[in-house]
Length: 209
Image (cartoon, rainbow, N blue to C red):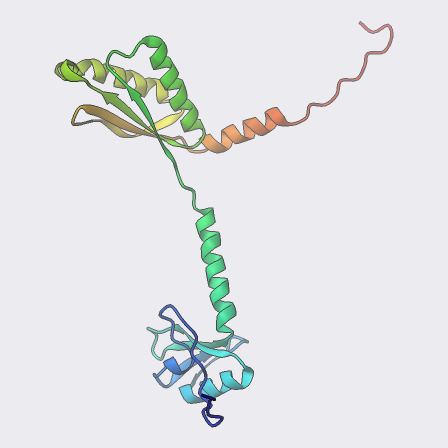
């Protein structure tokens, strides 16, 4: 079926709650022109202006009185909004949480290895959840695990900040450490300095000691 040539209504495009073109029923509206000038105008006139320009009448501030609208290319406007949202999401820094597990009877070398791991995670800008697991009869001697957790608190203080002190949950005792401010960037700068090419040494002239 062919469209009626007398039907001069502007087609509405899909919009996530944004009213455009003939979806805007309130009149009058405050129209923001390209030069920034604002004028209160009947919606039908603004709609005709948008139609004559081959653009869309878009409601940008529906809660204002009267509602604020602009005459723009809605498809391009929506694309720019999505692009900005993606850019903002990409800038968000997601902090990873790493778990380090120990037992009250963890040997000294194993303890040192786990603390070293935790320090490296904190230097990389990650959070660390330190978990002390108790098995069977170890639950009756939780003070041993508590002492080890207190020792870890001192050993991690150089690279991390305690965000949650030791807390018992079932058969585990846990604490959470966050990286100190600038820990990740400081390590990155140090790495870049190590990787930077070092100036070549000039050969000594004959007779120089």
